[in-house]
Length: 289
Image (cartoon, rainbow, N blue to C red; front, side):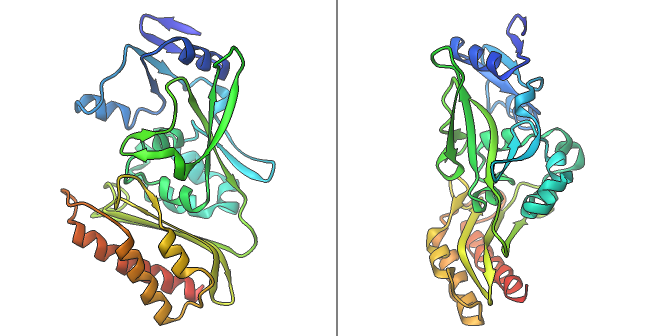
């Protein structure tokens, strides 16, 4: 491990976990596309030690392991977008990547950084929620490397806040491979959707058969303190034939389930109307699929 003053660059997961365990004040650096603007803008203070995790091989790669897709924390948005495995099994992630900032940012931004930044408008979080993603966390509390998994829906607890303990490192994201006839779509609304922070985002997923969705998952972004699953909307949609009346009813439930705020990008009222209208439009597309 290279250690120069207050900068460290571990070359293995073991080394990183050991350093996190014995050193309290650490800021973790991966792609830096969130960290650097936040620190320069005064929204985040770099801690006593900066740890660059870019050289840790265990945090890289995209592979199928034990019936699930495992995406390393250091996988960039570009790598995810170009992955043949992702395109085949989890195309909703490609759809989300296509709306993620600019090419230059995609080349540097990592999935782990987007997850740990825990923005209410995080572009990758909504599609990961409807895919029932879990995060994998590694630590070394007793001299041995230990791991735990946490559902993403439980991992996110507030703007910029997660259940990652100070001595833990996000190792990757795990997603069970979807069953046959799985359908999943993502939509992001903004002035310039690929470049701006989303005004709202929506993910809808489920098994589509005979004009109805089952095992429904619905998630919304930028309408609550964290990207949120929408259980009432899911219940209203579960196993219902997607006729005009059902679609209108579900869109109304979705509008009433979100609790957005007024900010510089949009009013709370406008966000609710967007949720209603875009949910209806997305379900119309599902009905025609």
